[in-house]
Image 1 (cartoon, rainbow, N blue to C red):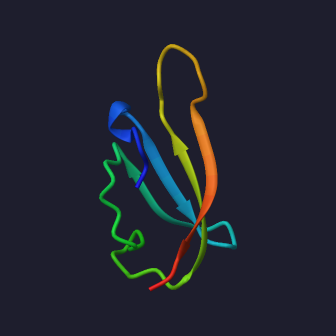
Image 2: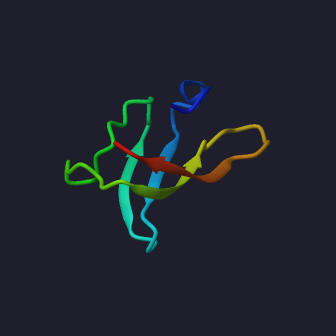
Length: 72
């Protein structure tokens, strides 16, 4: 869940595995990710790294990075 993401409708969310491979990408993301990859496959448990680009106008921080843990 990314709080406030709906305030930036032109956003882009990318998720990478530990090797740096892109496993998920969505433009106009609206908190509907279900733990699945680009091909619809369930991603294995592990640590993933994200890049959120807000594409906001008017300045301020526009990109955020971090990590998340998938554990089922």
